[in-house]
Length: 377
Image 1 (cartoon, rainbow, N blue to C red):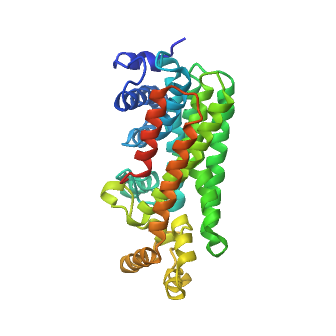
Image 2: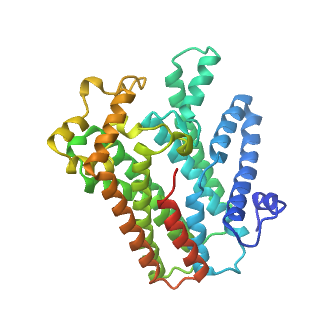
Protein backbone atom coordinates (compact mmCIF):
# COMPACT_ATOMS: atom_id res chain seq x y z
CA UNK A 1 0.00 0.00 0.00
CA UNK A 2 1.38 3.43 -0.91
CA UNK A 3 2.29 5.43 2.16
CA UNK A 4 1.60 9.05 3.07
CA UNK A 5 5.08 10.11 2.05
CA UNK A 6 4.56 8.82 -1.46
CA UNK A 7 1.11 10.33 -1.67
CA UNK A 8 2.56 13.72 -0.81
CA UNK A 9 5.24 13.34 -3.45
CA UNK A 10 2.88 12.17 -6.16
CA UNK A 11 1.45 15.69 -6.27
CA UNK A 12 4.94 16.94 -7.08
CA UNK A 13 4.81 15.14 -10.41
CA UNK A 14 7.22 12.29 -9.69
CA UNK A 15 7.78 10.33 -12.91
CA UNK A 16 7.08 6.61 -13.17
CA UNK A 17 10.84 6.26 -13.15
CA UNK A 18 13.56 8.85 -12.66
CA UNK A 19 13.83 9.74 -16.34
CA UNK A 20 16.76 12.07 -15.66
CA UNK A 21 19.23 12.61 -12.82
CA UNK A 22 17.41 15.80 -11.84
CA UNK A 23 14.00 14.09 -11.80
CA UNK A 24 15.35 11.29 -9.61
CA UNK A 25 17.05 13.64 -7.16
CA UNK A 26 13.93 15.83 -7.00
CA UNK A 27 11.89 12.72 -6.19
CA UNK A 28 14.30 11.73 -3.43
CA UNK A 29 14.37 15.28 -2.07
CA UNK A 30 10.58 15.46 -2.07
CA UNK A 31 10.28 12.14 -0.27
CA UNK A 32 12.71 13.31 2.39
CA UNK A 33 10.97 16.67 2.81
CA UNK A 34 7.54 15.10 3.23
CA UNK A 35 8.80 12.48 5.68
CA UNK A 36 10.70 15.04 7.75
CA UNK A 37 7.70 17.35 7.92
CA UNK A 38 5.71 14.66 9.72
CA UNK A 39 8.61 13.83 12.04
CA UNK A 40 9.12 17.48 12.99
CA UNK A 41 5.41 17.93 13.72
CA UNK A 42 5.48 14.89 16.00
CA UNK A 43 8.45 16.19 18.02
CA UNK A 44 7.12 19.76 18.03
CA UNK A 45 3.98 18.50 19.74
CA UNK A 46 6.08 17.15 22.62
CA UNK A 47 8.13 20.33 23.16
CA UNK A 48 9.03 23.32 20.95
CA UNK A 49 12.73 22.75 21.72
CA UNK A 50 12.46 19.30 20.16
CA UNK A 51 10.82 20.81 17.10
CA UNK A 52 13.76 23.20 16.70
CA UNK A 53 16.15 20.31 17.21
CA UNK A 54 14.39 18.28 14.48
CA UNK A 55 14.38 21.27 12.11
CA UNK A 56 18.15 21.51 12.43
CA UNK A 57 18.36 17.83 11.49
CA UNK A 58 16.05 18.45 8.54
CA UNK A 59 18.19 21.35 7.30
CA UNK A 60 21.30 19.16 7.43
CA UNK A 61 19.56 16.37 5.51
CA UNK A 62 18.13 18.65 2.83
CA UNK A 63 21.27 20.76 2.38
CA UNK A 64 22.77 20.63 -1.08
CA UNK A 65 24.44 17.26 -1.61
CA UNK A 66 25.32 14.80 -4.36
CA UNK A 67 22.74 12.15 -3.28
CA UNK A 68 25.16 9.54 -4.61
CA UNK A 69 24.03 6.63 -2.45
CA UNK A 70 20.36 6.81 -3.48
CA UNK A 71 21.42 7.35 -7.09
CA UNK A 72 23.69 4.29 -7.14
CA UNK A 73 20.97 2.25 -5.41
CA UNK A 74 18.47 3.39 -8.01
CA UNK A 75 20.65 2.31 -10.93
CA UNK A 76 21.43 -0.99 -9.19
CA UNK A 77 17.67 -1.56 -9.08
CA UNK A 78 16.99 -0.17 -12.54
CA UNK A 79 19.71 -2.33 -14.08
CA UNK A 80 17.77 -5.43 -13.08
CA UNK A 81 14.12 -4.35 -13.49
CA UNK A 82 14.41 -2.15 -16.57
CA UNK A 83 12.55 1.07 -17.38
CA UNK A 84 8.95 -0.05 -16.86
CA UNK A 85 8.85 -0.89 -13.16
CA UNK A 86 7.08 1.77 -11.05
CA UNK A 87 9.41 3.84 -8.90
CA UNK A 88 7.02 4.93 -6.14
CA UNK A 89 6.91 1.71 -4.05
CA UNK A 90 10.72 1.65 -3.60
CA UNK A 91 11.41 5.39 -3.47
CA UNK A 92 11.48 5.55 0.37
CA UNK A 93 14.19 2.85 0.36
CA UNK A 94 16.40 5.07 -1.81
CA UNK A 95 15.71 8.20 0.27
CA UNK A 96 16.49 6.30 3.50
CA UNK A 97 20.12 6.03 2.38
CA UNK A 98 20.41 9.81 2.49
CA UNK A 99 19.29 9.84 6.12
CA UNK A 100 21.88 7.17 6.89
CA UNK A 101 24.48 9.29 5.10
CA UNK A 102 23.59 12.35 7.19
CA UNK A 103 24.11 10.26 10.34
CA UNK A 104 27.59 9.35 9.09
CA UNK A 105 28.47 12.92 8.07
CA UNK A 106 27.38 14.49 11.35
CA UNK A 107 29.40 12.03 13.42
CA UNK A 108 32.39 12.21 11.04
CA UNK A 109 32.44 16.01 11.22
CA UNK A 110 32.40 15.86 15.00
CA UNK A 111 35.27 13.35 15.10
CA UNK A 112 37.27 15.44 12.61
CA UNK A 113 36.35 18.73 14.36
CA UNK A 114 35.33 20.17 11.00
CA UNK A 115 33.78 23.63 10.91
CA UNK A 116 31.82 23.38 7.67
CA UNK A 117 30.09 20.82 5.48
CA UNK A 118 28.37 21.54 2.15
CA UNK A 119 29.29 25.20 2.67
CA UNK A 120 27.37 25.40 5.97
CA UNK A 121 28.36 25.10 9.63
CA UNK A 122 28.58 21.51 10.86
CA UNK A 123 26.03 20.23 13.38
CA UNK A 124 28.28 20.52 16.43
CA UNK A 125 29.20 24.10 15.47
CA UNK A 126 25.52 25.03 14.99
CA UNK A 127 24.57 23.83 18.47
CA UNK A 128 27.67 25.26 20.12
CA UNK A 129 26.86 28.66 18.61
CA UNK A 130 23.23 28.41 19.75
CA UNK A 131 24.39 27.60 23.28
CA UNK A 132 26.84 30.50 23.34
CA UNK A 133 24.42 33.08 21.94
CA UNK A 134 21.68 32.05 24.38
CA UNK A 135 24.17 32.36 27.27
CA UNK A 136 23.19 28.95 28.65
CA UNK A 137 24.96 27.30 31.54
CA UNK A 138 27.85 24.94 30.86
CA UNK A 139 30.40 24.58 28.09
CA UNK A 140 29.21 25.45 24.57
CA UNK A 141 31.56 23.04 22.82
CA UNK A 142 30.47 20.13 25.00
CA UNK A 143 26.81 20.93 24.38
CA UNK A 144 27.44 21.15 20.62
CA UNK A 145 29.15 17.76 20.60
CA UNK A 146 26.39 16.09 22.61
CA UNK A 147 23.64 17.57 20.42
CA UNK A 148 25.45 16.52 17.23
CA UNK A 149 25.70 12.93 18.43
CA UNK A 150 21.96 12.94 19.05
CA UNK A 151 21.27 14.48 15.61
CA UNK A 152 23.23 11.68 13.99
CA UNK A 153 21.45 9.06 16.06
CA UNK A 154 18.07 10.56 15.16
CA UNK A 155 18.89 10.45 11.44
CA UNK A 156 19.83 6.78 11.73
CA UNK A 157 16.49 6.00 13.41
CA UNK A 158 14.67 8.03 10.78
CA UNK A 159 16.44 6.03 8.07
CA UNK A 160 15.01 2.83 9.53
CA UNK A 161 11.54 4.35 9.72
CA UNK A 162 11.62 5.56 6.13
CA UNK A 163 12.94 2.23 4.85
CA UNK A 164 10.01 0.53 6.59
CA UNK A 165 7.64 2.55 4.39
CA UNK A 166 8.99 1.02 1.18
CA UNK A 167 7.72 -2.15 -0.43
CA UNK A 168 10.78 -4.38 -0.03
CA UNK A 169 11.61 -8.10 -0.01
CA UNK A 170 13.08 -9.50 3.25
CA UNK A 171 16.60 -9.77 1.81
CA UNK A 172 16.97 -5.98 1.61
CA UNK A 173 17.48 -5.62 5.33
CA UNK A 174 20.60 -7.79 5.32
CA UNK A 175 22.24 -5.57 2.70
CA UNK A 176 21.20 -2.43 4.55
CA UNK A 177 22.59 -3.68 7.86
CA UNK A 178 25.85 -4.82 6.29
CA UNK A 179 26.26 -1.39 4.71
CA UNK A 180 25.83 0.31 8.10
CA UNK A 181 28.23 -2.03 9.92
CA UNK A 182 30.93 -1.60 7.26
CA UNK A 183 30.60 2.20 7.34
CA UNK A 184 31.07 2.22 11.12
CA UNK A 185 33.97 -0.25 10.89
CA UNK A 186 35.69 1.93 8.30
CA UNK A 187 35.14 5.03 10.41
CA UNK A 188 36.72 3.35 13.44
CA UNK A 189 39.78 2.37 11.39
CA UNK A 190 39.96 5.97 10.17
CA UNK A 191 39.95 7.26 13.75
CA UNK A 192 42.46 4.61 14.82
CA UNK A 193 44.80 5.58 12.02
CA UNK A 194 45.16 9.10 13.36
CA UNK A 195 46.50 7.65 16.61
CA UNK A 196 48.98 5.30 14.88
CA UNK A 197 50.34 7.26 11.89
CA UNK A 198 53.73 5.56 12.06
CA UNK A 199 52.10 2.11 11.85
CA UNK A 200 49.87 2.97 8.89
CA UNK A 201 50.59 2.28 5.21
CA UNK A 202 49.13 2.85 1.76
CA UNK A 203 47.57 -0.61 1.94
CA UNK A 204 45.95 0.13 5.32
CA UNK A 205 44.67 3.48 4.03
CA UNK A 206 43.08 1.68 1.07
CA UNK A 207 41.46 -0.79 3.47
CA UNK A 208 39.88 2.16 5.28
CA UNK A 209 38.75 3.61 1.94
CA UNK A 210 37.20 0.27 1.03
CA UNK A 211 35.06 0.15 4.16
CA UNK A 212 34.49 3.79 5.05
CA UNK A 213 33.72 4.96 1.51
CA UNK A 214 33.62 2.34 -1.24
CA UNK A 215 31.31 -0.03 0.60
CA UNK A 216 28.60 2.36 1.71
CA UNK A 217 28.89 4.85 -1.17
CA UNK A 218 28.86 2.58 -4.21
CA UNK A 219 29.19 -1.17 -3.68
CA UNK A 220 26.48 -1.85 -1.08
CA UNK A 221 23.98 0.71 -2.45
CA UNK A 222 24.16 -1.04 -5.83
CA UNK A 223 23.61 -4.44 -4.22
CA UNK A 224 20.88 -2.98 -2.01
CA UNK A 225 19.16 -1.69 -5.15
CA UNK A 226 19.46 -5.13 -6.72
CA UNK A 227 17.99 -6.71 -3.56
CA UNK A 228 14.96 -4.42 -3.89
CA UNK A 229 14.05 -6.29 -7.07
CA UNK A 230 13.83 -9.65 -5.26
CA UNK A 231 15.64 -11.05 -8.31
CA UNK A 232 19.09 -11.56 -6.84
CA UNK A 233 21.40 -12.65 -9.63
CA UNK A 234 24.88 -13.77 -8.61
CA UNK A 235 26.49 -12.55 -11.83
CA UNK A 236 24.97 -9.08 -11.50
CA UNK A 237 25.80 -8.91 -7.81
CA UNK A 238 29.44 -9.83 -8.49
CA UNK A 239 29.65 -7.23 -11.24
CA UNK A 240 28.17 -4.59 -8.95
CA UNK A 241 30.66 -5.59 -6.26
CA UNK A 242 33.65 -5.28 -8.59
CA UNK A 243 32.43 -1.99 -10.02
CA UNK A 244 31.48 -0.66 -6.58
CA UNK A 245 34.80 -1.39 -4.90
CA UNK A 246 36.83 0.04 -7.76
CA UNK A 247 34.77 3.22 -8.21
CA UNK A 248 34.30 3.65 -4.46
CA UNK A 249 38.04 3.51 -3.86
CA UNK A 250 38.64 5.95 -6.72
CA UNK A 251 36.01 8.25 -5.18
CA UNK A 252 37.90 8.25 -1.87
CA UNK A 253 41.26 8.81 -3.57
CA UNK A 254 39.76 11.87 -5.27
CA UNK A 255 38.48 12.97 -1.85
CA UNK A 256 42.03 12.65 -0.49
CA UNK A 257 43.30 14.97 -3.22
CA UNK A 258 40.47 17.45 -2.70
CA UNK A 259 41.15 17.43 1.04
CA UNK A 260 44.57 18.93 0.35
CA UNK A 261 44.21 20.78 -2.95
CA UNK A 262 40.47 21.47 -3.23
CA UNK A 263 38.95 24.94 -3.17
CA UNK A 264 36.83 25.34 0.01
CA UNK A 265 34.44 27.60 -1.90
CA UNK A 266 33.71 24.64 -4.18
CA UNK A 267 34.10 21.68 -1.81
CA UNK A 268 32.14 23.32 1.01
CA UNK A 269 34.68 21.96 3.50
CA UNK A 270 37.73 23.56 5.16
CA UNK A 271 41.01 23.31 3.29
CA UNK A 272 43.80 21.09 4.56
CA UNK A 273 41.86 19.47 7.41
CA UNK A 274 43.61 16.17 6.67
CA UNK A 275 47.03 17.82 6.78
CA UNK A 276 46.16 19.72 9.95
CA UNK A 277 45.27 16.56 11.86
CA UNK A 278 47.77 14.26 10.15
CA UNK A 279 45.06 11.88 8.94
CA UNK A 280 46.87 8.93 7.32
CA UNK A 281 45.14 9.06 3.94
CA UNK A 282 46.39 7.14 0.94
CA UNK A 283 47.79 10.42 -0.40
CA UNK A 284 49.85 11.13 2.71
CA UNK A 285 50.97 7.52 3.09
CA UNK A 286 52.07 7.43 -0.54
CA UNK A 287 53.89 10.75 -0.16
CA UNK A 288 55.80 9.39 2.83
CA UNK A 289 56.65 6.24 0.90
CA UNK A 290 58.01 8.24 -2.07
CA UNK A 291 59.63 11.05 -0.05
CA UNK A 292 63.34 11.71 0.25
CA UNK A 293 64.68 11.85 3.83
CA UNK A 294 64.47 15.66 3.74
CA UNK A 295 60.90 15.59 2.48
CA UNK A 296 59.95 12.97 5.03
CA UNK A 297 61.25 15.21 7.80
CA UNK A 298 59.03 18.06 6.55
CA UNK A 299 55.99 15.81 6.44
CA UNK A 300 56.49 14.54 9.99
CA UNK A 301 54.02 15.89 12.55
CA UNK A 302 55.52 17.85 15.42
CA UNK A 303 53.88 16.61 18.66
CA UNK A 304 54.59 19.99 20.25
CA UNK A 305 52.45 21.67 17.63
CA UNK A 306 49.66 19.14 17.53
CA UNK A 307 45.98 20.03 17.42
CA UNK A 308 44.41 20.29 20.87
CA UNK A 309 41.46 17.84 20.80
CA UNK A 310 39.65 19.78 23.54
CA UNK A 311 39.06 22.92 21.49
CA UNK A 312 40.69 22.36 18.09
CA UNK A 313 43.38 24.98 18.80
CA UNK A 314 47.01 24.61 17.91
CA UNK A 315 48.30 22.62 14.99
CA UNK A 316 50.29 23.77 11.97
CA UNK A 317 50.05 27.38 10.76
CA UNK A 318 48.52 28.12 7.31
CA UNK A 319 52.03 28.69 5.96
CA UNK A 320 53.17 25.31 7.30
CA UNK A 321 50.14 23.61 5.74
CA UNK A 322 50.87 25.22 2.38
CA UNK A 323 54.48 24.07 2.59
CA UNK A 324 53.40 20.53 3.51
CA UNK A 325 51.05 20.47 0.50
CA UNK A 326 53.90 21.57 -1.78
CA UNK A 327 56.18 18.87 -0.39
CA UNK A 328 53.50 16.24 -1.07
CA UNK A 329 53.31 17.47 -4.67
CA UNK A 330 57.08 17.31 -5.00
CA UNK A 331 57.13 13.66 -3.93
CA UNK A 332 55.00 12.79 -6.96
CA UNK A 333 52.25 11.28 -4.80
CA UNK A 334 49.36 13.29 -6.34
CA UNK A 335 50.34 12.22 -9.85
CA UNK A 336 50.64 8.61 -8.70
CA UNK A 337 47.21 8.86 -7.06
CA UNK A 338 45.72 10.18 -10.30
CA UNK A 339 47.04 7.07 -12.00
CA UNK A 340 45.48 4.86 -9.33
CA UNK A 341 42.15 6.61 -9.87
CA UNK A 342 42.30 5.99 -13.63
CA UNK A 343 43.15 2.31 -13.10
CA UNK A 344 40.18 1.85 -10.78
CA UNK A 345 37.77 3.61 -13.10
CA UNK A 346 38.89 1.31 -15.93
CA UNK A 347 38.53 -1.75 -13.68
CA UNK A 348 35.07 -0.68 -12.55
CA UNK A 349 33.80 -0.13 -16.08
CA UNK A 350 35.28 -3.47 -17.14
CA UNK A 351 33.41 -5.21 -14.30
CA UNK A 352 30.10 -3.95 -15.69
CA UNK A 353 30.79 -5.66 -19.02
CA UNK A 354 30.12 -9.01 -17.34
CA UNK A 355 26.69 -7.99 -16.04
CA UNK A 356 23.45 -8.82 -17.82
CA UNK A 357 21.84 -5.48 -16.99
CA UNK A 358 19.74 -3.06 -19.01
CA UNK A 359 21.83 -0.88 -21.28
CA UNK A 360 20.50 2.43 -19.99
CA UNK A 361 21.67 1.46 -16.51
CA UNK A 362 25.07 0.37 -17.80
CA UNK A 363 25.46 3.71 -19.61
CA UNK A 364 24.39 5.65 -16.51
CA UNK A 365 26.82 3.75 -14.27
CA UNK A 366 29.71 4.33 -16.68
CA UNK A 367 28.91 8.06 -16.74
CA UNK A 368 28.66 8.09 -12.94
CA UNK A 369 32.02 6.34 -12.63
CA UNK A 370 33.72 9.13 -14.55
CA UNK A 371 31.75 11.96 -12.93
CA UNK A 372 32.23 11.01 -9.27
CA UNK A 373 35.94 10.32 -9.65
CA UNK A 374 36.75 13.50 -11.58
CA UNK A 375 34.71 15.95 -9.54
CA UNK A 376 35.81 19.35 -8.16
CA UNK A 377 33.99 18.84 -4.84
